[in-house]
Length: 393
Image 1 (cartoon, rainbow, N blue to C red):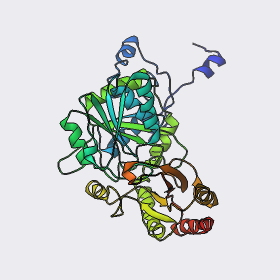
Image 2 (image 1 turned 120 degrees about the vertical axis):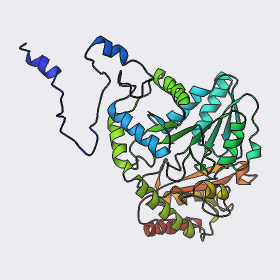
Image 3 (image 1 turned 120 degrees about the horizontal axis):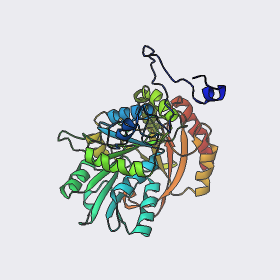
Image 4 (image 1 turned 90 degrees about the horizontal axis):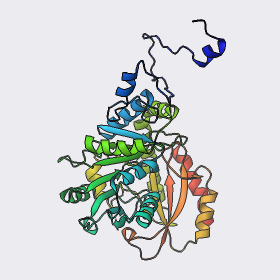
């Protein structure tokens, strides 16, 4: 058939020779897949298939390839991707919680998760409880408890929870466990094989925005599990909510995964040097990091993170004599540490928080400054803090 030029431009020939191979997977961009016949189209709509090429929201070769790699990184068997770390947290909550169900959250949890669960409590009658992550006895679930959230370590005050004790207690009562493993990134510990007894969580969520991306320019999250039945439950919610990710973003994260372990090690090394410096600064009454022997949960970090690794985050408790205006001035005075949220990228960040909870062992609120340690030379980062300390004089 002799086609008009407009038709030929609208339906170009899409073909790649079989012998062409590249180091990086080609980027597939697709909302619509086309089929050779109606039976193939009907067969493709089985949403439980491992690779469902029926519509773009379910996945493309690019998105499935990244999901497979994240599953390997986490030590899981199944993985789903979503547009952000918060979106996968909400995906888990939406899948497993119903009206009247009880859910437990650590006191040092990621604040947006607390806000989401508070909203579910107000609107739908989900019962939200909190516990001290370093005290298993503070976790006292009722028969209505369906979900225990874990976070290792807490993202601001960095207490490392008694993961093994909490998971065993939850499993003994038939309670589902979900961990925010963004801090560990699949490198500091394996959520699905935590000790010699192979203690494991049921579900792991991971903000791929952080270390897998590594550039501070991509938003994405993952939810992993080793249990196919749990995977299918999450997959159904994932499909019905129309959750999808960009093939271009997936390709960029895939490219950066190769350097992830090297970057994580460098973040860790820089942080350990910075801890030594911060511990000598009189303006800070405490330095918070799981590797410090006096830190809450240090022994649990040692038991689980057998690699000795920790993420590039370190916080300090500001001396109680300092004012919030001085703390703000200190953060504003920093040059290399940029004011901003998130972590895991090459650029160092800083932010201050007001914290009050039992795990901090303070009756009154305390101010914490959290340093996100990037890949700059550590001497320059120390010098930056040194010059900013003048505001405390």
